[in-house]
Image 1 (spheres, one colour):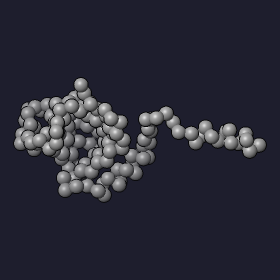
Image 2 (cartoon, rainbow, N blue to C red):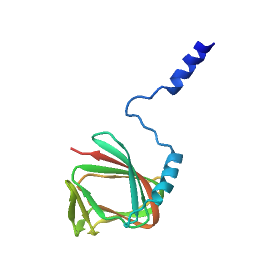
Image 3 (cartoon, one colour):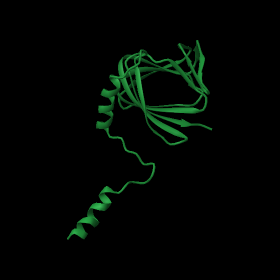
Image 4 (cartoon, one colour):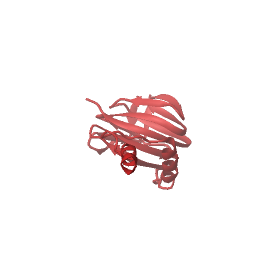
Length: 149
């Protein structure tokens, strides 16, 4: 009997394939509350969930407008978990400065296109495209940063 029980339980506790991660909606809700308590003076908090070498995953929470961002080699895939924001993409970066190799930040965008975002929306922003999130109240989103060649 013990041997049968052992054979039944072992597969239940076995690890999944390497690199497979699942984040549940409840996990994101709990993490959203945690991030809200850790916001910077720029009204943002984020946490890297996993780094896979050529791409990584993050969860971010904002209660204020973001800086303009331009990533030379990384695309952003964003899934809105809660809240609303206006995303400005394209155009020209105002006040651009390098913050890290391949990373530029700025104060605003001129000539960009506005996209309204809400829970459930998914956005793909290719590398080298300026983007800025303007937040009316608060927003939480899941990000995949993927290296483009």
